[in-house]
Amino acid sequence: MNKKLKLFVFAIGVGAASASAWASSCYHTCVVEYRMCIRSGQPTETCEVNLYSCQDSCEGSVGG
Image (cartoon, rainbow, N blue to C red; front, side):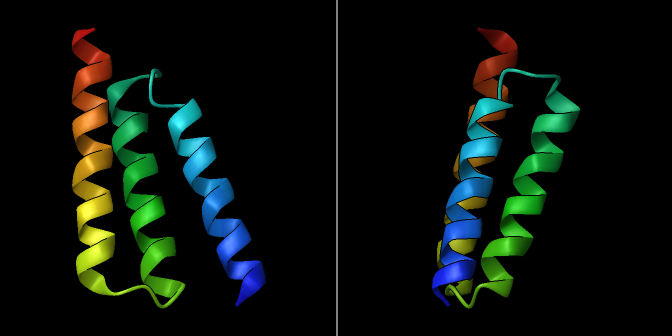
């Protein structure tokens, strides 16, 4: 479980670092993070909130 958590945190860092990239790749990163969240055993609601937050940051990076 600890390994999965470390991998998930790493993926979040990668997603945050790539948020200023093209919007399509940003959204793809969000979906990948969402899938990793579900696989790690996190509650679905938590993963969905993280997904929506990630997608919001994608929209913000495109306009800013």
